[in-house]
Length: 146
Image (cartoon, rainbow, N blue to C red):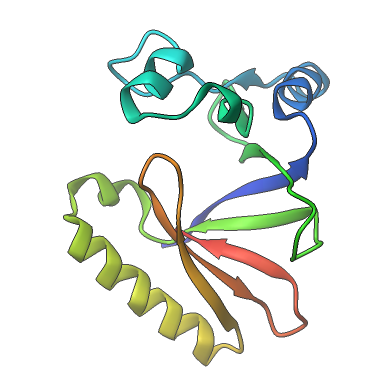
């Protein structure tokens, strides 16, 4: 089974790029998670501070064919690569996994990718509690695994 990907663009103003790329590609802003009528309601629920609410934004293909494009506020730090891929190695089954099962699946994927020549950088956790791995391909290009 092939892994799904998203394209990630580090930028200064995620909301502005969401608007631009939605128009340019015929994409739409990604809807908030099920059970929430807005991204603000979701942010309130998971405790994202007001000043961090433009840190991420995304557009999706309304037909579900093209990849999701995520815009994230770039802090100017390392790595300096402003575009990278996120590999969705666990897929939709991740909603059925416990945190420990999800972490074990990420460890197995890390080992598989390292055997192919990738280099692990770190495990990190986002504002909403999601965990992913930051890695580099054999030529040093940054990518994430979730």
